[in-house]
Image (cartoon, rainbow, N blue to C red; front, side):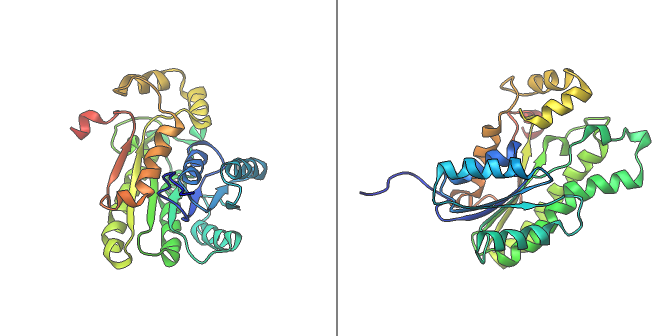
Amino acid sequence: MVDSIPAPLRGKVAIVTGGSRGIGAGIAHKFVEHGCSHVAITYLSNKETAENTLTSLCRINANLTTYAVAGNVMDPDFGSKVVKGALAGLETDHIDIAVSSAAYMDLNDFPVAVDITKQKWDKIMTAEAWAPLSLAKEVIQHMPSGGRIIMLSSVNSKLASGDPFLAYSASKAALDATSRNLAAAWAVKYGVTVNTIGVGTTNTEALTAASSVLGSALETGAKGASLLKRIGEVDDVANIVAFVASPQAQWIVGNQIPANGGMLAMLQS
């Protein structure tokens, strides 16, 4: 019988950092639904949650090869450790898709502008800008032509959000610039595309934690800013990432692709 189920990512090998939960886990699930045969995820410290996510992925495809790599975005060697671990754990010699979803979002540790220190600035820049670059630098050495490097950015890279988002917003703007320049350097040389995804406020554990610090105004404001007047869901973002990872997105390169329900509509018009 002919298999007629669309699978644009059939047989692809993917790494999703931060893939044990939240948006990262949603992306990993979407990749498997779209045909990926090998998926590695990273986790910070909760190995049990990561293993539960892998079990859930294998329910979609019993023949799926999975692996969970411990990785901390604060580690200067994040990229090399993750890529080496994923290649060994998946028993493969290449990576087709690399998604940087892992992030540092402890708002209790986000200083207001007048209190920011060089140490805090460097900490957030390392997690949000260096870690994705570190991953990209390592993975490009094992990525065939047609590969995809995707970095999760934020609407904050383009918005004036105020306290306590100065360093975080700057780090995401740096990530957008990093992606554009990698795209310019690697699109022809390696035949890969590099893009960021401009994620808006999304219904995750991180949003719940942020709301506990900033109050209900965070979600109320996000709903008001969205043209759809709602908070995004994980699948809203994961569907867009899966498309950008697909062969159909070969003409999208060096861009920030919006996944924000129209939160930046006035800027994008």
